[in-house]
Length: 77
Image 1: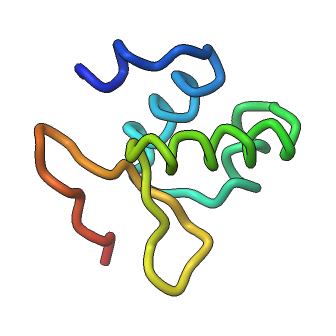
Image 2: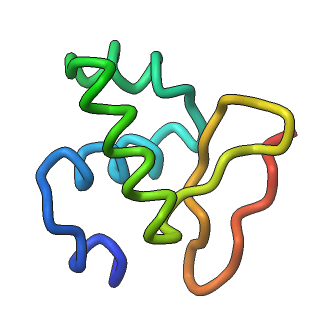
């Protein structure tokens, strides 16, 4: 949870908490479930990706947390 403590916006924290709960999701799904504007989610996802908090799954628009407990998360099966 060290990464969570360094997040500076409430939206970033909501996205990270959502991904911790569901594992992986598309930005559309995140926006729908959290009732946030899609553009806000897209900007947040870009920021979190730049910070190395999340990563996109290869060949997909789905995103996952980049690491948990210091390890990279595996791609869901």
